[in-house]
Amino acid sequence: MKSTHLVTAAVAAVALSVPLTLVASAAPDVADRPGHAKKDTLRQAAPKGFYIGSAAAGGGHHEEQPYPDPFTSDQEYRKRLAAEFNSVSPENQMKWEYLRPERGTYNFGMADKIVKFARQNHQVVRGHTLLWHSQNPAWLEQGAFSKEELREILREHIFTVVGRYRGQIQQWDVANEIFNEAGQLRTENIWIRELGPGIIADAFRWAHQADPKAKLFFNDYGVESVNAKSNAYIALIKDLRAQRVPVHGFSAQAHLSTRYGFPGDLQANLQRFDDLGLETAITELDVRMDLPADGKPTEAQLAQQADYYQRTLAACLAVDDCNSFTIWGFTDKYSWVPVFFQGEGSATVMTEDFSRKPSYYALRDTLAKAGRR
Ligand code: 9MR
Image (cartoon, rainbow, N blue to C red; front, top):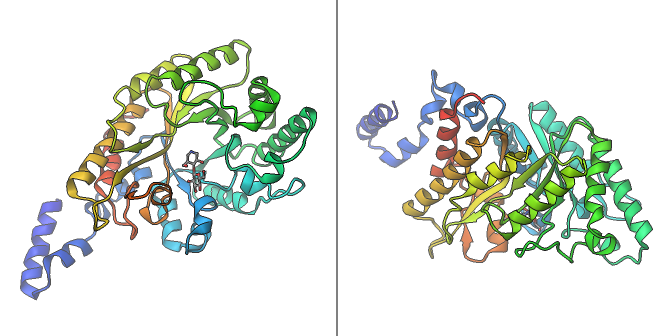
């Protein structure tokens, strides 16, 4: 169908002496035309019961960029976020730094807006995150609190935040990035350092009491493969489940780079968490690359990136209870990558002007080919 269409466009271009590239790029996508409309977007292509998500851009690095808040201000962005995805994750807007500017203040404005947007667009929400070492406010990190006070601060935060969105959050990243690469609990995590590892079980118990329906996850990067870090999660989760702590899921963020080989044991690694009776998820996929001097990725680079996206999705689809797959932003316009990695970029599935890249089509085709779940 597509080639017929392009031939028609080519004939028209010659007839009108219009440059072919212009006509071809202005042509609607093959699936935009009648008969294909159903599978045009990622969420339409996704098998029933499978959640395809994106981060909702705002807060964090965006605040230092020369554009207004993407989620509330960019209409084209909002339209795409609603059309393409049936799951959203607040990129920064539910983090401590954002929600708790002062000890006695909760700033729920933006998180409320995201949850409302999701409801209006029939999307689920992944809550991110409750217990982390990073993006905590100074009043917390530098405060002189007793152990009892700190524990109460966390307990109160979890009950307030999880309770506020009770019934509206599908999965919560309760604990984020608690292990280092060697598989040791991070001492830079204020909660674990000050209160000991037992606080992890408490956080899960409190979150479960505050919203018994939300699925509670451990989330981390660098855990795509079987390695010291993912092994540490296996051991910890076994231990917690033996104590009947309500842990329901394990997720790999999947911030990948074409500098490194694809983590070929991703499926096997997710499967061993599935075998423990857990749900699994991919929560923050992006695939960054070293950009050529002109800033434009080559076709070969885009093809390699599409392959990484495709294989990550295929790995998740092959694991029974991997039902949630989120990309960390869908347009290069708002990606965190160029801000954090000098010379790298083009990490998402759409260009800055929302053109779909090969990686977008790799996801859509893989979703469309997946059977019912
Ligand atoms: O995308 C987020 C960016 O806007 C923030 O500035 C950054 C601060 O650390 O956090 C980014 O999101 C991170 C996520 O919350 C946890 N996993 C790693 C993500 C990329 O750094």
